[in-house]
Amino acid sequence: MMRVGAIDCGTNSIRLLIADVDDGGLTDVVRMMRVVRLGQGVDATGRLAEESLQRTFTAAEEYGALLETHGAQRLRFVATSATRDAENRQDFVDGIHRRLGVEPEVITGNEEAALSFAGAASVLEANRPEPVLVIDLGGGSTEFVLGAGSGVTASASVNVGCVRLTERHLHTDPPTDAEIKAAVADVDAVIEEVLRDVPLDTVATVVGVAGSVTTVTAHALGLDSYDRDAIHAAELAIDDVAAAAADLLRMPREGRAELPYMHPGRVDVIGSGALIWERILRRLAELTGGRVSTAIASEHDILDGIALSAARSLPNGVS
Image (tube, rainbow, N blue to C red; front, side, top):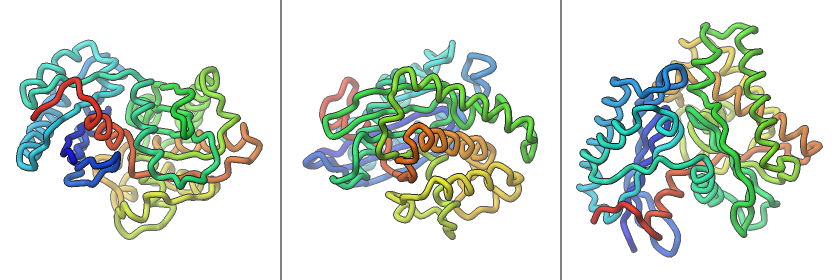
């Protein structure tokens, strides 16, 4: 058995998993998230804002203390969309290295997709129809990865996520019809881009991961609190997902903030995240002639994939 640490630093949040790995399975020791908005404004400026960097470094210091307390033998730190795009990403890399002693890996979209698939696919029962499409709906990008028991067969990463789409289009509370129309056009266009690389018409099973997907699922289920056990592996009809997404999109900020399962850092961006998830599922239903009629939510995602990879081989570990 090995105790590993995994950090996933995205556009909106930075997450930590400390887990024991034994025979390819994970047992959680610590799992936590801090919303730091690292990618705030990066779509417009091309740079990571100083206040965003400082929020991220504060969270990294907290995580470093936990990794030491719990005796993590290895650590893998993966950074995604916001840092891929930023002109000053070296400031981020240097700041993390000073605080954690590891070099953060600014991975490509395809690498991100493969890690997401490894984590998310663990939710599925052995007899689920294949191929499986995993959608990792992040703050700055969305990954589409198609695969089966033999591994990943196709993937694509597009620069549309809940933070980017909000900053581009959804400026009114609640958003206007014109803003929603522009956002829909943006999402529909990137789905057509994905079709050039991923045969979405072949999909048999869909799994969605990350906070936008799980929050829409919690809303559709009408939960009294954020319940990971209720959300994980929940399979919902696309019509039910669409109804929940539309409700979140049209709801004023005050109403979203009062929802018992809403993370405070997600209040401002859940409308766009819900819109992205609904548009993807609607298009998949069309492309497959209705064969895809449900979607599965998974609480296991890229973070779990990072932890599993850390146990196998590690380019930048601590011991």
